[in-house]
Length: 317
Length: 275
Image (cartoon, rainbow over all chains, first blue to last red; front, side, top):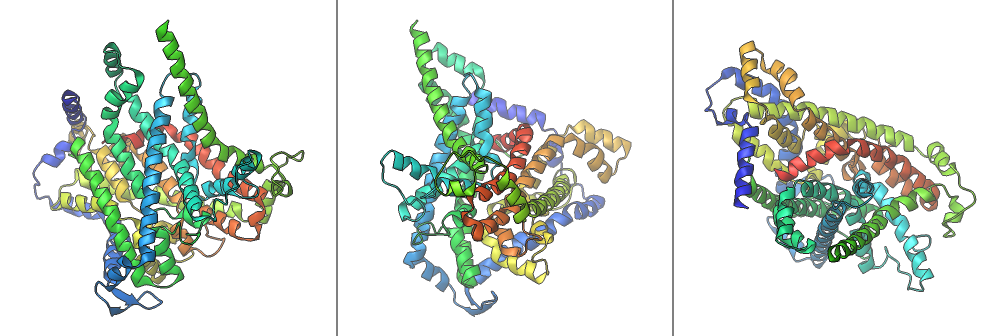
């Protein structure tokens, strides 16, 4: 294992000779400075207006009460934060979000890995399965919502029709709190699978066949090969995918809006949907800014974790 | 003998898993496409079969709803966003690799750090900004905030770093200016990464939902994701046949793009995953 890692980093050094430019000390070059302005200017301007400024502004607003135009009126210090963290309704949203995020991530990862692993064996028709499995990547959020709204529809949907045929109780998927969450999780996982499958499949292909041959000589079963050989080798990719899935799940909005609108009874009122409601429906911009800051902190934490994990494997330079 | 039996058994489980998951993935697609050919009256009775299969729902979707206009809007927005990101991200990445100036690496890490900030957490000030810039309800509102992307800059920088040094030296000998080196050497060299970014930025723009929902109010500029939301919330809500036909009209082009772009997409994504 150690050897693979060092081999890898050697290879990376060989194929990234332009990185030598980075290592050179800066000879003060006035012309480069002038060029940098032109090459970087447009991007920096856009990032400044639409990323840096709103970040600071959101942080600023989170300490204020606002009028209905979103302008700050009264400085309230940590009051917004305190009232959110003691509000049972916000804590319920936070809890629902955590349940949703972890359910979505676990299922996406588990199923994605299972799909990729089974599809990468030499079975007949594996090309067909590969195309099918990556298919949901081409499905946008509103199309996915339409497909699944139809599946979950209590009168015309397939699921409840099947339930009737099998004499099972008919479930009102989207109007019963627990089931609504289940429905939203299923739909999200379905949407995620294409992307997850593609990444896992590509990574599994890159595991050198010699490792499996060695494992076979040692007499490891297929299952043990998976846990002893495959899993450790692709663990960085698993971390990468899990963090991406986690972050995307924290940001979920479209499916919620289309399928449940946060209901029933706020059971699927996830963090981003709540920000939207508080800011743009209730005009409570100060409180919504506080919620945004909390969301940003949670996501920044997981992104930071991702960088740390990736850094461990390969340094950026 | 034994080995063969074990192998067969393994195959059995593999096929079982593959088939079950295929059903899970395909059913919403298949059912959606299928019902788009059924008369709505029969769908609402719960029928899954009808002797009146037709393109009527498609005709209705195209003539009675602005679905084609929505598609056109999305196409305009996504193509503009994609082109802008290709230009501005590659220029920035170039600066971060080939230009030498004070504070370059610090600046790069600052840009990198913005990848941590979710756009969703910044919509409140951004909405105020586009309102005061008079961009609301126009194509520009969905393009201008996304003219560049930290992810794109990061990805292209990684690609540019792999350019062989001999090319740079040769360019210096020939006396190429930075613009010439950028346009004639670096961009062609990083073609695959540029294509990956193109696909990625196009799809990201195409799939935008929250932002256009906040900033567009008329069918003239509304992109397709919010257009479908609009169709769904209107009186046509129970017109399942037409809704499914609209969904099919929207999803078929992306599936085609995905099918042909799969190779680039996969290699690009894996580049991100492995590094």
